Length: 484
Image 1 (cartoon, rainbow, N blue to C red):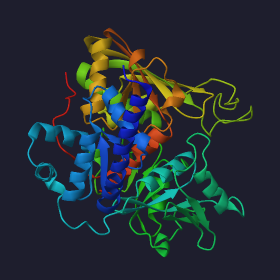
Image 2: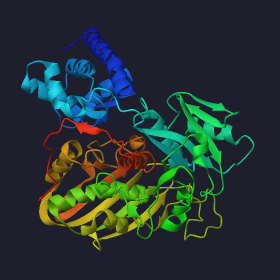
Image 3: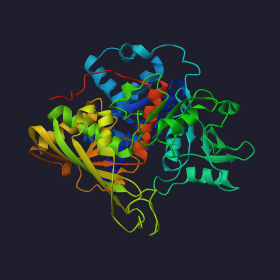
Image 4: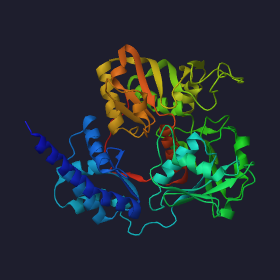
């Protein structure tokens, strides 16, 4: 049995290896626009212990152990071959190289040939404007700033709000810097009063005060062909959202709520391929729709969904009252922090906009509960092909690791996890394997989701798809097939 001193020495040695990775991870991201990950778990901006935790996490999910030495060697090789902007899975590259052998740089060059373009593209980013700066708007800002890199992707250029007070700018910056749910901003937040700008980790964000979405001249601030992300929820139809397109400098609009009428509701990973260059207005659907649709697709393609009911146990939102007061909605006038509130959800019907094959097969309802973030969807499904708990869980675990839905679906098996453990998850939904019930043609799944951060991560993915800035994912390899 190892002694105390031996275990401490081994841990310190692991820390030293992780420390040596950080400069490679950082320079690949800043200088080349390369996002590195381990089986989909990002390495950029991680601390030493974060890098070690990422290695342990993928092993717990059923992957083979990834020696830290292998990760470091591949990172060094990537820096030497200097690929262009891409999302590179270091673990898969390490696995492939161990099986292939030979010269590492030659192997990497062969695997990354599509992005070995020499000079990096200039001005390849896309301007983004956040119209509204509430819960989702501020989290989108955090993600966009963290992903800014060398400026080859999405560029947060401005936020548009109504002026609330003389010290409005300072208050907006403070809300970005401090968050009661998601903690402090990772970095520095400053204010330039003269220029009316917030400066976050070197990103200058113009604060524009306006009451009319059609009356802003964004080109006056050097912003052109921008995607405006409307996270106010005030307008949800084409007529209302088209107001943004009348402002100079706006190319497209993305709504962070379910769109009405003919507006396409996009759930990234499901139907983002339906985005056309001609689409001027799109919706990123709702947090619940994003959480359940990928899991429903996986189950439908493997087992065939006959019918089902979706019950979402949802954290309260800003639309509810803190204490009992008048509200135009049923039950929502009662105190959000003291009550469970039965209400409606359109998520079950909205699924059909992304998955037409489930049209008319799902019903849904919701219970708002006194927690500020992280919700739980319970999917009670009748399927065509009989199965059991072990088979369903093994399938969903593999889907979370290897399928085309691995950015959307996560999987966990622990008898101790509770809602706060999923604050900050960048996946759309997390299947709780221990809670799964499967008996014959009945499957009941419990899917956790950070209805703020997880949803915001999906919105950013839609933004990347709209603007053509989503990096190519390499290496390519066969993944688990979602089919019966």
